Image 1 (tube, helix red, strand yellow):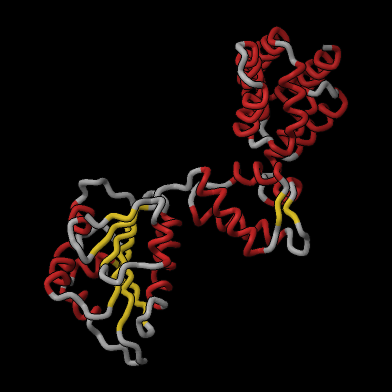
Image 2: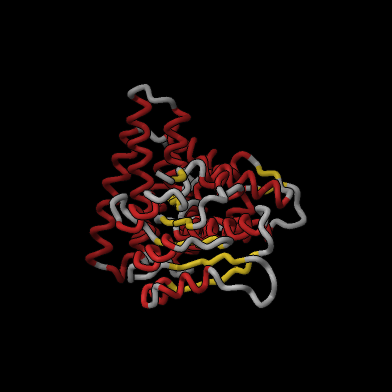
Amino acid sequence: MAIVSHSDADRYILRPNRNHFLILIFGSDHGLVSERSQMLARSANGSGRESLQLVDFAGDMIASDPSSLIDEANAISLFGGAGRVIRIALGNKSVLPALDLIAKAPPTDCLIILEAGELKRDAPLRKWIENKSFAVSIECRGDDAKDIQRLIDTELKVANFSIDPDARDALSAKLGEDRLSTRSELDKLFLYARGQASITVEHINEILHDASALNIDAAITAMFSGHPKEAIELVNKAMLSGIDTNVLLANTLRYARSLHRGGAEIYKNAPFEDTLQTILRQFSAYSRKSEVAMHLRNASRGKLETIIMALHDAVKRSRKNNYLADEFLTRLFLALALSLKRN
């Protein structure tokens, strides 16, 4: 079977096996599929072949005319070079008839790259590719934590940046949706921090965090820190920026529950630092690590249960009388901040 594992994919793409002229790149991470396809095309041009011409096709077009793939694979470029790279973005129609034809008449100097979405192990295309000695499949799954750290390290080195430890944690929490969006976020961050030696948490907060989320986080932090005046100012700022009262209440309740759950785990002898890291990851709160640690350490379980009940009641009231929700929320945050100040 010709299958390249997820962990070996990048190494293979840098030095592809020249016996494989047909490569299927597929998976749930569409950004990574596209990136690896582009890298493979570049690697093919630098693997000892003469300069190859890159040609893109839609899979449905090839499916409608299977013999066209043979014609394209053996075409002679008008601009010199011995052959070409054919990249095919697969659609809804099967290209297996075209692949059967190309298998009977393999091209002499052509690399064919098939790009596809997620395919089950028993999908006809995967089974066909993985049973041919001249073909190989490469699956593109979403980046895990190690993949993200490796990508951050690589891109930091290329951009000539260092990064603070807390900033690395905050950045990691923002990445991983897919490879394309991860690179986009890194490019945006590096452009913003250009001219400075190190990436800080402030850079990430300023350029990668949603402004409304920051307003919510700031209000919640002030309230749980027992700063009534600051909490009121930040609640009003959040509401003036258009944040819905119910969203602010829901986020506050979620945070209170997380602190309560964390406190229960610590009571059962769970390590404080491990519990803290869980909450930081859950809320992407690395820039507020000292405050979250203080909340987890200082708020008693009994106090948190009282706060959770008050927030539950506030959610019910807000739903019944939404036109009074803003005023009620302001009073609630003031009362809770005062109670935590005295705690």
